[in-house]
Amino acid sequence: MVKLHVALVHHPVKNRHGERVTTAVTNLDVHDMSRVCRTFGVRALWLINPLSSQRELLQPLLDFWQDGDGVQFNADRAKALELVRWSDSIADAIEKIEQQEGATPLVVATTANRHAGQSTLNQMERIEQPALLLFGTGHGLCDDVLDGADFVLQPIEGAGNGYNHLPVRAAAAIVLDRLTAGRHCV
Image 1 (cartoon, helix red, strand yellow):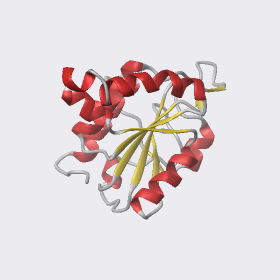
Image 2 (image 1 turned 180 degrees about the horizontal axis):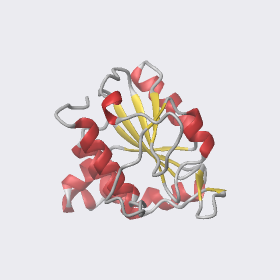
Image 3 (image 1 turned 120 degrees about the horizontal axis):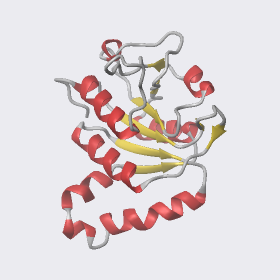
Image 4 (image 1 turned 90 degrees about the vertical axis):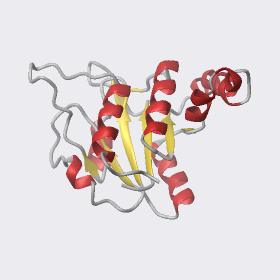
């Protein structure tokens, strides 16, 4: 797959009661997801959150690692965090990717649950155009996001013990490893 972008979606996602919510951006997710994305050659990590207060909380962290003492302290982390982009919505991220890549990206959603018409990772291998891979926070992406995606990936199968609630950064690492196995994103 080429020209792969990843989105860590904080809105619209579900809470444990299935209600539509906006979740908070967490330092740990931003650090770990950016490192995973850099490792697998992803072009950008989009943080999707409409709350300006969340962006204001994140900016000092990015400033420290990109322009402050963090660059000298850990250049690898600074390089990974260069991938971070902010977007108020999935639609806005798609528009920005289209401007950057010159083509509308395919939207590929992930979920820990079964969903009609799910695709396998093998089906994703044939994609040649830019793609935006969506990972939901909280208890996953809202149904309308899944329904509006070009593809919805099958859930990661664990030990088959009925428990399937991976941390988003672990799910992203697994999916990107499987998706890019032997191939490189550009």
